[in-house]
Image (cartoon, rainbow, N blue to C red; front, side, top):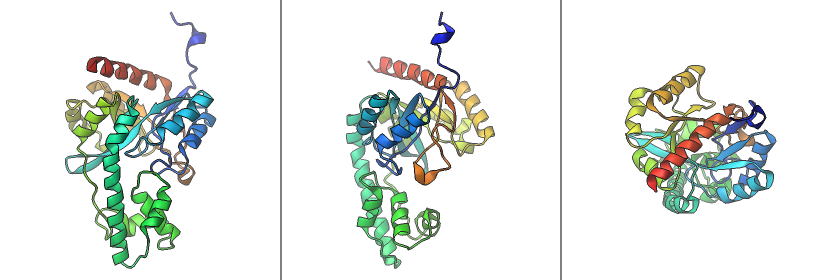
Length: 287
């Protein structure tokens, strides 16, 4: 029997969704870990977009301060014609998965170049060098093009950049190279991780999620800043019905996105412990 003194305190929280400069966050991986530690978190997942390049730096920082780091990634995948996001958590083979994702990284750079060319044709003299500077070595995405537009004085803010130029249907929009959700789940499992449907919101319903369980989906992100209380209750019930683990996080991007604060979603440590059990089951089945 576990003695009450040995149990984790009820205020132990984790944050299982956050970003750094390895993708589109504003803080380096080590600084993100420091922020998680300062927030009093028990564990923290770094889940940059389509890259695990920040994990080694984050792991050194986490080891130094005694914080548990969950190696993660947020993949942009397609479910039919719709783009959705898939969190890969508890990645064991970080280097192997990162090598695989480098191909998609090359596609992201080529896409950014095409976006810049469209903007130039429209009369906005933004450069690819400015986009690379905004990315600061991270996996390039439309937010970096938006920041370059802001820095160049072409738009007032990132929202205007998307609304006028970068959103789907706008003049400078370029579609992504598509990764199917089944393939995304598969490569996460091959890297020793579990696959969690990120911030499904009102679209997180049985008819949407149940087909993915057959593909190996492991969990649902229940707590997210974009979710209403109704979303949380529905997703938690759906996860229980389908035998999925639950997850949650702030989707923190750093100081530039102050509304999403590390630890604010108060994800309980017990959720992480349930994920740990699912990870052991996955790896045991694959052995």
